[in-house]
Length: 614
Image (cartoon, rainbow, N blue to C red; front, side, top):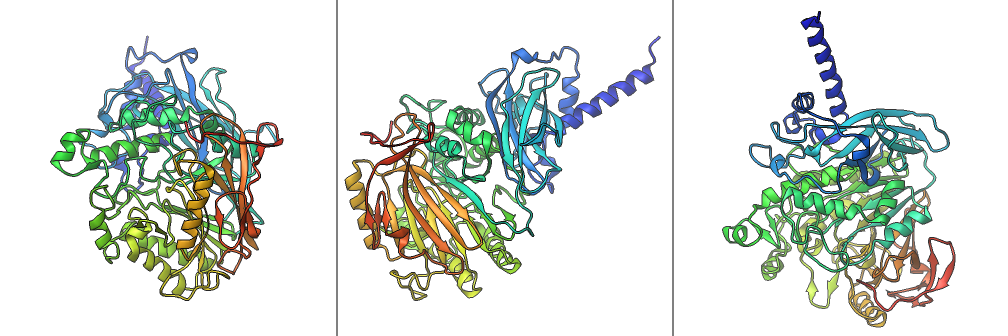
């Protein structure tokens, strides 16, 4: 005879076990430990999965649809990511960001109607040189979070390389084996760190060759992505955007993330390196700021004509999809969209990641208000970051200097340096927020904070400059005396830069260097990335270009090498050793050779293409 008490106890124990497994997937958790109400109602989901008629998926009905990824390394833990699903297609429901959900909720509405058949995955982490499992766990995923899985593997050793893998519970169906690396402890002596730095990967515009080249060369410890990881547009062609329209809904953004993560070169780079990522504007919408973007504003006319969605709703959709699909920690979101954070990597460097786009940015260029922005560009009230983030940023710079870290590396979206174009100042970068830039430079100079290096993406071109407070501090552009640091801004993975032959591109680069006191090298022709090597004595940036992104290929062209000696706060002279492969170098020579590395075979050859983009 059945004992009701025993049956009730068994069901309770089962529910507790199931709940623990749901909690293991960070995409169910609140993005802020201060706001637990932002998380999904895990007991509700687990009870739903125990209902009569809920049939679990068989392993052969499921696949690891988009590879694996890892990110945000700490000395003792790292984030692991995958997606396991019955289909490549994203969940079509938009209810997780509708109704009475909190603003910018990254998680799922309490009482959603979703898949009653959760998928169980196991994950394991082993040192790269052995099969011994040092961290493991189980987690569930459902359609509520688009079948994504994001877990924190903890209890790891610092600055150590690990392999990781996911397995569908109770089966032998496994994901690809991923490789990742923890960070060094803050108080440790670190002799060298290397970062591959990327930005602006537009799927229809070209192939992601830069990701694959860096992954195959296998030189970096970590990958930094400075934003525009996806684009929100409706571009067609052989790699046409999916869905084939401007994106607004949660389903739209999920689908777009899934399409980008289907690229084999992006999958390879994600599989083998821990990423540290931030967003730029296109993860939401072009030229975004706190109250809108160039394509959607808080007006009735914009609502009716530009997608039928409010600015805040669209941001909610984009942010939720980003956190579901990226191996990023859900850090404390005190008041809204926080991705700004920092990493102390030994006594060698502090990596400070900013959000100059979505957090609390004052109005920017919207393609119809440029004259207005030009008039107010130096208003003291204008901010790229908002007061909360800006004060945090200055505190991070001072804390880093006071703790004795040799270098401060700033992961920032947009070009920081004072750059004048042929048409005048741009308005959508730091030039449109001059008071904010001056406050930053003032803090660096007055507190004697040295060895500061800004990184930037966004512009789809390469720019290398001394970091200078022009008109306030003396500066010698020939020697670099008077600078307080250096900026390395990188080109795009595939987004459009200079459109035309290489010779006119070099001419345009020459004009830019000639018009700008701080600018030492510029190139707008090549797509690619740069490799940042950091040691206690010096920092080196090596720029690489893809000869063409019109086809998938493994050619990688060295463009230029730059050195910053610790304590000198400027580019070492002669800049780039006096010679570069492409663009224009102040006081040096441009010597194009087209001698290019095949990252598949390791062989060098002279390579040229007639077309850069699809």
